[in-house]
Image (cartoon, rainbow, N blue to C red; front, side, top):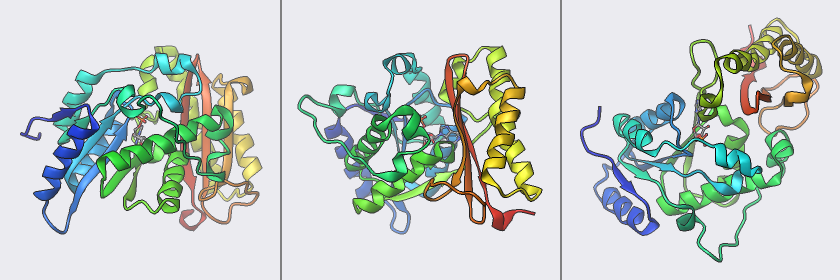
Length: 297
Ligand code: AMP
């Protein structure tokens, strides 16, 4: 528990003034300002990032903004859960100091025109199925959040593996003075990766959704047993999905790719990313595991 009440701010001007005051009081030798960007509907996966930020930083800023420009489908944007009051309480409990919850007009005032495209890393997987608008939207809003908050460090989840690579590319290419820390995927005890979208799953759909981690674990266990051919591992994952009622028509992708570039690999002789995206009864879910030959038994 954290005793200070959380400060909720909605404008960039107000945010800057709060951050400036807090930076002036920061203890040297620690990260002064940490940022956890979120789209709200917070769960333990987000809260783990806030706790990690609390450990590492003097001031923890959590942003809560359902970014319209990264949604390729208006229906998905409309259906995205919005639970700000509960979110603020969870952030306060986890030790967050400032909740930045701007309106869309604050982030994209009329006349807004800039878009950031980070290039090849955004193209496969999510880029291919959600289209180029998705990661352009993500890169642009994250660049804006970094400029608004000016954090020393920002925290992201491995759950969105390609997003972490897009953000590292953005920071590297644009010389942004911010450290990126990636935190492990938080799962329910049965293995389902936590996601704000899980609350849209019926009990039956939730059982089906366990197919994602089952497929990834099937891939991982064959990898651990010595299988190194990426296409064979993908086929193993697809068979597992099918056995759990997730047909090919509902798979956006199931791919074993180079973990750093997301390029095509044949034989896994360096870290690979097994990533999956499927639609379970109308809800789009993603998950991934890293296959690292240097750590295989
Ligand atoms: P979102 O609100 O979905 O944009 O997610 C905000 C941040 O939380 C992103 O960096 C996500 O990768 C991270 N995140 C979402 N779900 C999880 C999870 N289950 N485990 C760890 N991080 C997560």
